[in-house]
Length: 524
Image (tube, rainbow, N blue to C red; front, side):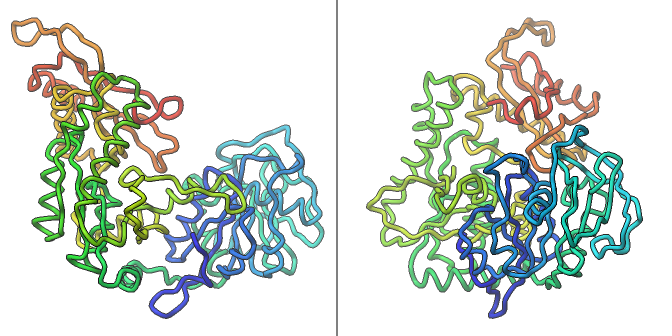
């Protein structure tokens, strides 16, 4: 993402907190927590070109955790510009350790590694812990720890196995925490971060959604002018919000192509067309391409191959439709901030290639179009909030995630029209019953899977030798880890009975009780 001298919003500047990423699984959480406090935050790799940090002109910098050990040579270090700017710094976990090492302290590999809950005892008054109790339950995840505090630093907090769990500079606004305030397991973690953001950095909480929508509409108008914009509309949250935002900005100059690959949820293609073409009056072209997708998937069982075929076929169909549309100068994509971070964070010094996204990609070279990505700096929860403000239905914005290749990766083995119809019906029954039982919003993702297994059953007085359906439901905050949802037995029994009784091609239903890890959420 191109850094600017702060973020411009309706002719004023937005205060920014920069998160320097050292590779922690929690880095995105830090930025999200800051934005939840209505302060803009951006993530950049620790070794980004220093000119980008200077251009961003942050109010403060947070140094994330990471998997490396500062006791080893050639591991990530804080760039010199972070010190030269003379702005507040907060080191978290690895960020604390490299801060201590670089400022003259000593870090050792601890014999007592801490993973999970710990109780910290606050020893010294600190602005970070103002208005909090002297003991707090926090979340630790570290093998190394600071042994010798740097000169001009004061010990702030300790745990039983980490004598230096928090420290601060005596005269400069530099702080460090061994624990993770950004995770929900840390008691008062939000308060600690807000104390840093507001009391130390003096940042303004002016990252507001209604202002942001107005700003994006003006930016789109300025960039696009009187030209047409092409959008691949999938019906998912990101492309739907992109469509609604562009429609507000440029109206009929937005042309959407909706590719119905036959692998969507039951009734989804009709819903998408009703929502966007009829209710919102968007300019939507529907491509009925089920036959093409099934033809290309015929005989293919390998999951990775299926994904590639579905992605490639989508591009071919989208290209064919797009070429028919004359005088299109811009291509819109529903790229969101995690897409940008995940595709760029592990590479260094700008040697980065943004991944192609499942909704659009690989357009022919003769279609020379500029990209419009109005959600590029937003997290998923912010995209949903924008969708609400734009008037999209909550049931569309808050429904469970759906894989890019659709039901193609929830049908194990070869994909056929008949299997797709069976799975659509089973999935529909499961989801409808979750909604009826007020369980849908209590789980993070739920779906049915078609297994390439036949099983003997008895329905009525008849023997049935038919397919097996697996049900999957998980609870998760970030989808990096997930716990299988402990749905009530009587509910599962009711869903199972409905599926077997109403779908002739199913003889048995099983429930997946695998968590992530070791299993993934999707089966393929």
